[in-house]
Image (cartoon, one colour):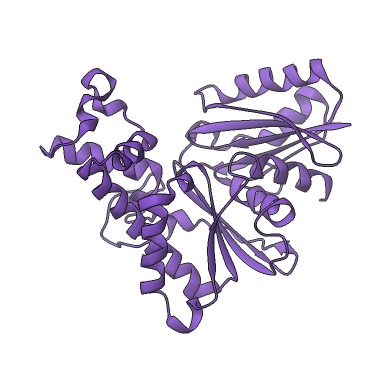
Length: 302
């Protein structure tokens, strides 16, 4: 018996085939398309043609209710109000659950990753947006943990959620990309101007990080600014929850030099000294697979 785990993010979708003993048999990753439902159906059909599937677990970047309806996904608005669990269940007649992507990633870390053996930890998913999960004494707490939408600048940039000054407007992959583009538009110099045949509006956050490592001063400045903003968010989490560990996952967490190092240093400066002494801030080893494994684990252990 095999299971399908799906992790739907604002930038990429990961779909994995998982065995009964939680071995990852295969996994694919591709950009999040406009017509998500059609692509998901095609991928699920492909797995069904290859092997016997007994369940499908899905994580989605956004608010999801107890029935698997995507209430709101600021970075994937095409899924807003979509009853994703029932659509998949009715199409394929297979047990299906849908949950927030950070929640299933937290479950994945607790059972297969950096969270094993830890009583209390916080997970942050760093990608197009920023999500979070909080694990305490054997379970993920049933709280939204929309850490990307904590306000760090009450008169700041307008977020897609409708609020001003959200953390992900300053520290996410989208924020990094938009910040560099804005600075180039204002006349500042960067090698990014020559990417994509001069159409720098096509740059991605990973391009910015690569240029920063290659010595591009503007790219380094943008990455550091994002890291400081993330550090402010981490300090708030430390001051409120005081976890034993903070686990960073998602594609942007791979930017260990400059971005996460700056964030960790900033968090230590900003958080209360009596709370931050023994907290570990670590990078996940399950960046592409944690959500997939966690979605299947949740499916089988509801």
